[in-house]
Length: 113
Length: 117
Figure 1 (cartoon, chains in turn blue, green):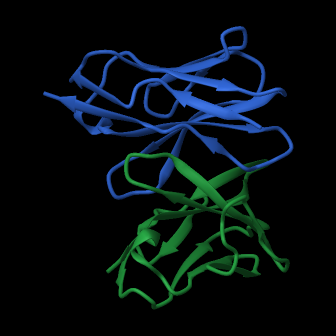
Figure 2: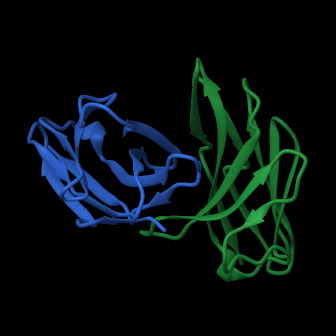
């Protein structure tokens, strides 16, 4: 079975500062990796995903994540955050032939002016 | 892009009553839908997987008689919480497997906050 660990439960950050959200996974087989964002009172939106190929993937809001197989990590980074980036961020993993996702516990990002 | 509509967004009910939550894929056919449960400050936990026209597959520890799932059509799945109790209070989210262009993707509903008094 797969599992995901998000190392930071809460990350406060000032506007225009960079942020990194850490995600580590464990699996005995190859996996696909995802970052989702959940804004207050909304469902999940896919930020970015790694399926194969380049280990550096770009997200829809200027974020990026790098797949590191040796460290079993998929950390999310954004060089400059905005107030509107305040949300819950979830790292998730699934195996290639199964659409069931295993989620991490989430990281709450709070951006302050 | 593809849209999944989940209704209601919020429901409050009395203990012992049943609550139905609907999940619709609005512009695509969803052969598979997933139901998740999220407790405050915790991750989403998969409850069950439903395939159109067949019985749902429940994850270990999820009571199938308590959480009834029906996936009668390619665009609608429902989750009924039967005889709800306060411990069933949670945020429930559905996701649907569908195609966007040539790619298969998962699309999430906006969730239902259930409060059982």
